[in-house]
Amino acid sequence: MGRIPDEIIQRIRDHTDVVDLVGRSVALKRAGRNHKGLCPFHDEKSPSFNVNPDRQTFYCFGCHEGGDVFSFLMKTENLTFAEAARSLARDAGIEVPETGGGPDRGISEQLYTANATLLERFRRELSRPGCPGQAYLERRGLGAEDVERFQIGFAPDAWDTAVATLSAARIPAEIGEKAGLLQRRERGGHYDRLRGRVIFPIHDVRGRVIGFGGRAVAADQEPKYLNTPETPIFRKREALYGFPQALDSIRRAERAVVVEGYFDQIALCRAGVGEALATCGTALTADHARNLRRRTQRAVLLFDGDAAGERAMLRALEALLPSGLRVHAALLPSGDDPDSLLVREGPEVLRALVDAAPAALDVAIERAVASGHDTPEAKADAVESVAPLLALVPSAIERSEYCARLALAVGTEARHVEAAVARAGRGEDPREAVPIAPRRTGPEERNLHQLARSLVEHPSLAIRVPQDELPSLLSGGPVAELVRCLVDAAAAERGVAIPEIETHLSDEARDLLRALAIVDPPLDEAAAAQTVDDTIRWFRDQQLKRREQEITRRLRDPAADEDEKRRLLDERQQLLQRKRQLASVDHASAVPPN
Image (cartoon, helix red, strand yellow):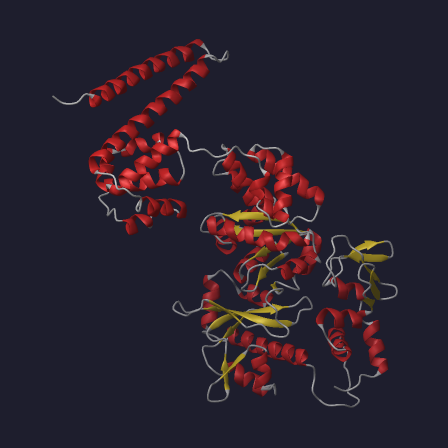
């Protein structure tokens, strides 16, 4: 690469604002005569990275990296001095003459050029009359202004569009291959990677095209989405779709909104949420987190409101929380994505959903206790599910506050939750930090096991179990789940073979079924039938006792009025009659026939 004259270097330096250049990668705030932010060269929680606009220099008091506009670009993008100078010259509109050396440019510059060249061709193809990409985008609600704003293009369903375009621009096919635009044929030559797809260009923060995402327009075309592969300039674990347009909005809103798809990001921008970004075919990573944290302290995630969306949110928190980001989570209505919600409800509803997004850790706590926390074991399980996430929060104050919230939600002491979080941070079992009484098998669980074993041994006895009473007689848990499944199968006259029953069970209930199926010695049918009848009577009796205790408690309540007391007394009388009926049935069944 030829030497760049000194006077050109000075012109580039004079025409490049170090605050603007660094600000594309780091969220800067004025601090006296300097601007401060989090250092892009090492992980830190408090900003020690300073940019001085007067001297056009930067310096980090943490890792001691420093320099000018050229060295910043060299360090952040792994460029040579000449590559950094040419890149800044292009941004400033300065022509760089060659004074000697070979004609070859750096590989990164050639990849950027190849991508930019092909984007121009893709955009021309989309503007052609009858282009199938136009009809597809219109169906998705995108007009000509949107196409122009987001630089959307179209890759024809042909094998040589990219090949011919790059060749005409005198860009070697090997560069096209290295950029992920072409694939090599086994018998020699190359062919297009992206065909018959709407094209979304992926830019870096400086506006250079680093890769492409393609959406199939034909219903039978697979895969639905296809991205160019990773290249020296396209690293999916850190790339985000929506740069550089989102940078100013992120600064103004002091947040970034992160979604999973290109159309979702476009929908948010059309709704006025310009700080939206999208991942490029990957889950969120620690590199994404660092990329975001340099620009903002707050991130809002949008996920489906179903179980899969909840799992995706928890995975995202594992990647984002260690960076110090304060993460909020907006859960979309079931079956909706930002694009469909925008079309159906309008931009105001979509914006309101984002603006009202609660803290993601509050959502995680709420989901952890939703299934119940009325037993010591349930409390420990709820703490166990959230403690590893709280351990990732860098701020001791924020972590302590969330520990207090989790303790309040499950009904335990904050010190126990903090101990569980500390254990989780060390990779130990957080449940051991929450003191619970030793688990004992009570009469209810013993009776349930006896009932389940009898029904597994003799499925035909399930018809003796009153299906309509099961919801009120049995509590939750895997044993009750197995009993209900066996009874439902009998009532529906479904098969009761173990493989068939297993398909309707949770993992715990399935394991129990398999264990009961091999218990020795087997029960004979008469003994199993007696066990079924006795167990059902026992559960009915327990139900009556619990209701009687509740009536007694309410009768002792001084706030109860006379009408309520009379009603409760009448109900207690009915309960006593019911208990006598059950007792007489028990006595009759115990008398042997003559």
